[in-house]
Image 1 (spheres, one colour):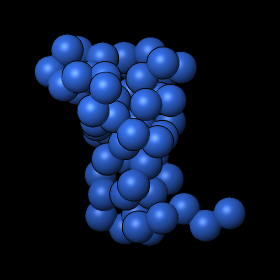
Image 2: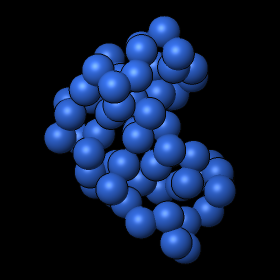
Image 3: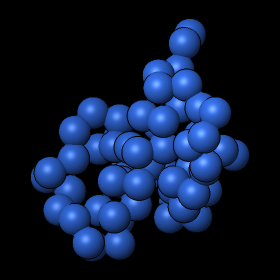
Amino acid sequence: MPARSKKQQMAAGAALAAKRGERSKASLKGASREMVETMSEQQLREFASTKRRGLPRKRSR
C-alpha cells in the first residue's frame, strides 16, 4: 500500500529507522510514533519507498 501524502511517506521513513534501531523511538512524534508500534517493518518499507513526486503535501480528508 503506497503512502497517500509526502508527510505520510516521511513519517513512515522515520518509523522504519526507529524500528531498525537507527534512530531512537523517543525522538519520534505524532504519526511516526504510532506507526512504529502498529505496523510491521514490511509495511513501513512499502510506505517509505513510495515515490514523492505527484503526492500532495498533506492528505485531504
